[in-house]
Image (tube, rainbow, N blue to C red):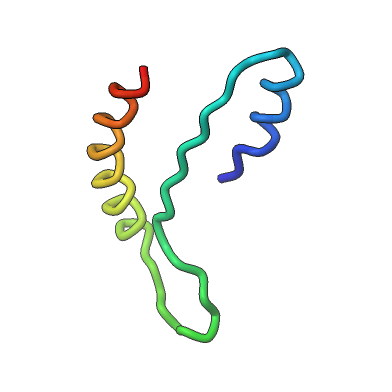
Length: 59
Protein backbone atom coordinates (compact mmCIF):
# COMPACT_ATOMS: atom_id res chain seq x y z
CA UNK A 1 0.00 0.00 0.00
CA UNK A 2 2.81 2.41 0.74
CA UNK A 3 6.22 2.15 -0.85
CA UNK A 4 7.80 4.85 1.31
CA UNK A 5 9.46 2.53 3.90
CA UNK A 6 10.84 0.32 1.14
CA UNK A 7 12.24 3.29 -0.77
CA UNK A 8 13.88 4.72 2.35
CA UNK A 9 15.56 1.38 3.10
CA UNK A 10 16.69 0.97 -0.52
CA UNK A 11 18.15 4.46 -0.69
CA UNK A 12 20.03 3.91 2.59
CA UNK A 13 21.95 1.07 0.96
CA UNK A 14 22.56 3.03 -2.25
CA UNK A 15 19.97 1.48 -4.53
CA UNK A 16 18.39 3.39 -7.38
CA UNK A 17 14.61 3.42 -7.06
CA UNK A 18 11.76 3.92 -9.50
CA UNK A 19 8.28 3.96 -8.03
CA UNK A 20 5.15 3.22 -10.03
CA UNK A 21 1.75 3.38 -8.37
CA UNK A 22 -1.71 2.40 -9.50
CA UNK A 23 -4.77 3.95 -7.89
CA UNK A 24 -7.42 1.23 -7.84
CA UNK A 25 -10.24 3.02 -6.04
CA UNK A 26 -11.23 6.39 -4.65
CA UNK A 27 -11.72 7.30 -1.04
CA UNK A 28 -14.14 10.17 -0.81
CA UNK A 29 -16.43 9.86 2.23
CA UNK A 30 -18.88 12.45 0.88
CA UNK A 31 -19.37 10.39 -2.29
CA UNK A 32 -20.92 7.33 -0.59
CA UNK A 33 -19.44 5.04 -3.26
CA UNK A 34 -18.77 1.47 -2.20
CA UNK A 35 -16.05 -0.58 -3.83
CA UNK A 36 -16.00 -4.34 -3.63
CA UNK A 37 -12.78 -6.33 -3.61
CA UNK A 38 -13.61 -7.61 -7.09
CA UNK A 39 -13.75 -4.01 -8.37
CA UNK A 40 -10.26 -3.32 -7.06
CA UNK A 41 -8.90 -6.56 -8.54
CA UNK A 42 -10.43 -5.73 -11.93
CA UNK A 43 -8.80 -2.30 -12.05
CA UNK A 44 -5.46 -3.67 -10.83
CA UNK A 45 -5.49 -6.43 -13.44
CA UNK A 46 -6.17 -3.99 -16.27
CA UNK A 47 -3.45 -1.65 -15.01
CA UNK A 48 -1.01 -4.53 -14.65
CA UNK A 49 -1.42 -5.45 -18.28
CA UNK A 50 -0.69 -1.86 -19.33
CA UNK A 51 2.25 -1.52 -16.93
CA UNK A 52 4.02 -4.58 -18.35
CA UNK A 53 4.89 -2.62 -21.48
CA UNK A 54 6.09 0.36 -19.47
CA UNK A 55 8.33 -1.77 -17.27
CA UNK A 56 9.81 -3.51 -20.32
CA UNK A 57 10.62 -0.10 -21.84
CA UNK A 58 12.26 1.09 -18.62
CA UNK A 59 14.36 -2.05 -18.25
